[in-house]
Length: 437
Image (cartoon, rainbow, N blue to C red; front, side, top):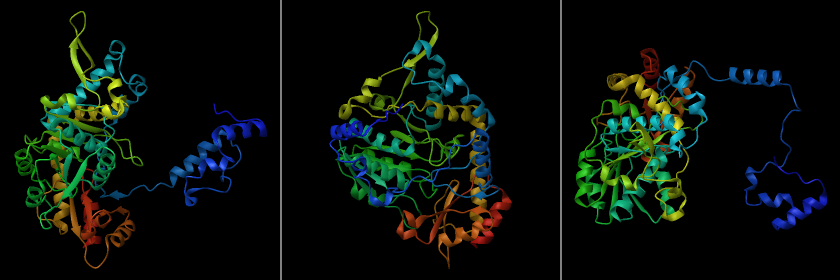
C-alpha cells in the first residue's frame, strides 16, 4: 500500500529528504508536452454493474468484420482453442521460474519439449527458452557471437526487420559493439552479396541475415554464410514468420538462429506479448543466454528435468553476465508448444503451403516490386497515389491494408508491404486487388 503523508510537516520532511522544493520537482525531467496539468477526467465511484456495462459498450465500438493484410513481423494466424484451454490452467498460468526442480517438473517438461521442437524446426543442436521476443533475441545473438569469436563488429543486412535493427543499435550503444549495415539488391530485394563482401573483414564477429526477409523474400543464406565463414565470423539467421519454418529447409550454414514465434498461436495484442528464440550448435551452447532445461535422471533412475548450465545469479552479474534477460517467458512459449503439438510436422507443412499459395494468388493480381521468390509477404509499388491514400481507400471497404515501406525505407516511399495468410479469403484478396489496381 502506498504511504500518504497526513500533514504538511510530513510532506515537507519527505521533500527535504528527497532534496526538492515541491512535489512537481519530481517530474521536472519530463517534457512539458507530456505533462497533464489538469485533474484527470474520471467520474466519481460507480457500481460494478456500471463498470461492466461501460466496457461492454466500449467493446461494441471495436472494428469487427475487417479483413487484414498487415504483416511485417506480426501475423494473423488461426489459434486452436486448445491453446487457451492449456495455458489458462493454474499450474501453468501462475508458475514462476522453475529453480526448484523437485516441485517444477511439469513446467520444466513443457520447456524441454519446447526446446526440442525448436531444434527440429531450425536444424540446430540446442535451443533455449525465455527470450522476450525476436527483437531482443537478435542483439542477444550478436552478443553471443562476440563472446564466441572475441570480436566486436557485426554486419547486419538492411533487409532485416527495421525494428530489430533499431533494438540492436540500442544494445550496441553501451555494449562496445560496432554495428554496420550492408545493402539489399534494389531489383531482387535479396541481400547485396557484393556489398557484404566489400564490408567483411577479420574484425567481424557476426553477419546477420533474415529469411524470409522484411520484404517477405527467401534470401541467400548459403552465400552469406560462405562469406562470413571465410572471415572467421558466425552467421546469424533471423526469422520473424515462424510458419515459414514449416516449409523452408533448415540452413546448415547458420551458426545461430534467432527470431520470433508470434505466429504460433500468440495473438497480437497492442504490441505483445511475444516469444523469442535462440538456437545454436552444441559447441556454442555455453555462451547462449536465457533458460536451458536439460534431461537427467532422479535418485530412483526416473526421467527428470532441471535448469542446467546457467543459474539466476549468472544473469545478475551486470557487465560480466552472459545475459540480463531474467524473466520466465515460458507461459508464452507454452502457447507455441501447444500449437506445434496440435499441427505436427505434416500440419505445419500444409499450413505453410496454404500461406504460400494465398500470397502468390494475391501477388498474381498485383505487381510485386521485387523479382525474387517470397513466402507470404511481398512489396507492391503503387502508381498515382501514396500507400497512405491507398490504405484509406481500403478502409472504406473494411480492409486493413499493408505497411507503407517509406516509414523505414525512404527509397520505397511508393510501396507497401502486403501479407496473406491462411486467414485471407479469396473474396477479400479480390477486393484488395480491385482497390489497389
